[in-house]
Image (tube, rainbow, N blue to C red; front, side):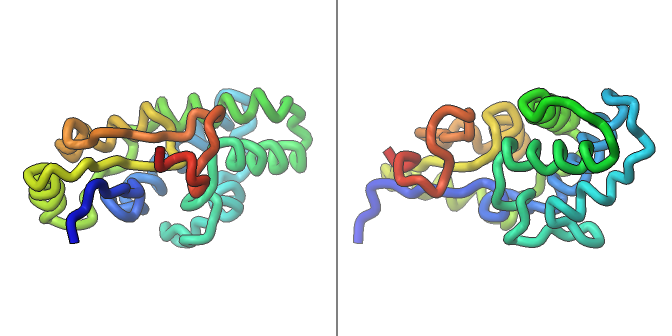
Length: 173
């Protein structure tokens, strides 16, 4: 059966999730707390709320399946619990900014040593390939560049906070 197109997820499908996202999250959260002068709040509380336990991410946790808006909401709720009152929309922006600033904290590793060859084979067969992720464009393109595969994708769909996020079928158009 001939394939016209293949749509990939990024994290856990193309790249090893924990090798990048656990260290990036740790640094981003430390940066958020430093920006707010609240280093007294334990970073571990945020990581646990995101679904990270002993350096491993729960596949159903918000870090794995959520959006930056959802992570920002969690950060906002924990900050409020500790008496730090910052508007939620400001927290969401801070979360995105700090994740972007700390994108180099983790290691981008492919899920398979044959990843590049497999994608090139699809391109040789004239198959269009796309990526759909709840991540933002800055970090998504950085990860794809680090793996040497950015130019292989015909379409890169990221969460811009405007268009519907995956798994909405609008991502496939």
